[in-house]
Image 1 (cartoon, rainbow, N blue to C red):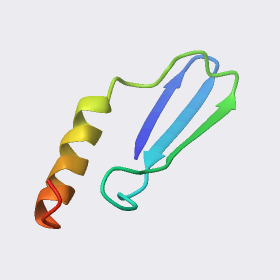
Image 2 (tube, rainbow, N blue to C red):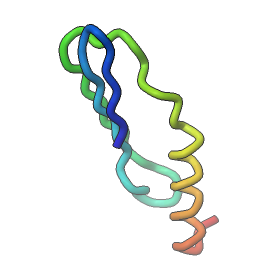
Image 3 (cartoon, one colour):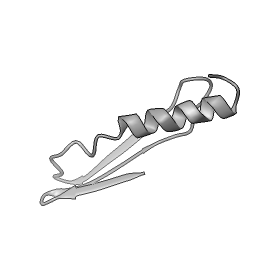
Amino acid sequence: MLYDRDEHGEFLHFYTELAGARVFFEVVERIGDYRGFGVANAAVRMAAHHEARQCAGRA
């Protein structure tokens, strides 16, 4: 889960576990008038999903 905030509001962001080999769902909520885009966390998510695929034998 990612949490960020700026002077205008807050930002909540998370990804689900993989559903199948490569499908996941992304959930985002902006609270107030948050104007940012969150932290660049795609590389972390991709690494976690890759590891999950490896553990499941679906590289």
